[in-house]
Length: 185
Image (cartoon, rainbow, N blue to C red):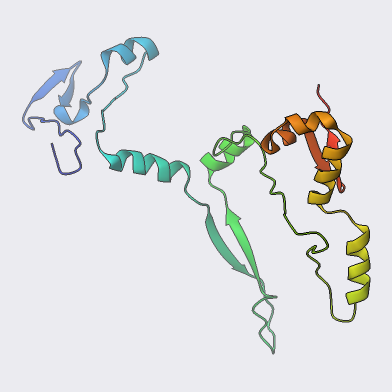
């Protein structure tokens, strides 16, 4: 075995045979699995890898990031505008394109995670532009936050109080500043 824990096969370089008038040398012979040969009707080489390097290779190969390329489109200009003159392009290799065309996912997904923003009474988070403070405050007063809407849902539906906070999104969805019962089917 070598340093990377892969087995090395010994082949005698001098062994030569003639089959149907053609010279065959050991370098033409590959190890194969007899069971897979019978099942798939083709020689398949199966090796047991007992190193973390094999797992690391497979993981990085499957989840590797895409390659990026920069393209420059320019005419002769007196002033150089770097932002206006390049387009960030993405290179998608053939295996990745096929994987995505077949609709396969790169990893398992179950559902989106939505954080419930918490704030104290009358202390909503407000963002505004200079000079429009009053308008932003008025809009914040008239709009319900997700937390306030959640409290209103608990008051209006007594069956919700038996559910845990983490189970509410299975039955309700937050849409347009309101919690609505999910539609099944």
